[in-house]
Image (cartoon, rainbow, N blue to C red):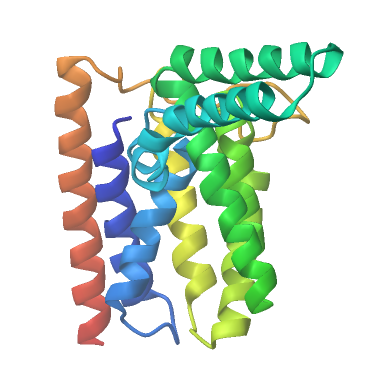
Length: 246
């Protein structure tokens, strides 16, 4: 399913949580969190909507490798004497430069997400927020897993919900776990409606659970995604309004 559809379903799910779950106050930030969480499973795909947004440093990664190579070459040329160390220095400089030049979109974005995640981990340690470090670890590791594998499991949804629970405890923001968990699960449910399906219980079983209604990328699949989003929105709106009338 396309990222825009996942985002729409996640936001609608956030409205459902805000309007239907007892003792969870209506919160625009909470609904936004549900939308963010609905995109999180696709961090395992370098071209996903969230990967592009979080990998804010991607345009600098290639040049960073090239500059490191140039700096290492300069250091080797001016400061190292003739001998094995000098040859090793030039070899390493050439390697860094070639890696930087050869990098293309996907690999650059993975490294950018790794950098973003590690920075978040450090920020979590500095602020003593365990949930922030766990979030950073998720962002750093997810891009290096296969698409629709580990991030598309019930265990990943549980981990994401637990991160929300820790944030709820630390920040005193009631309902974070609900918004985060429901948004994440909405992605897995939506992908279950595609022909590729989801391996919910991996690695216990590699069985792919699916109700093959949607062919992602096809015109018919795109149209069906819109129908599902509109239908889901109408259903949630009706349930929320009905709940408010009691």
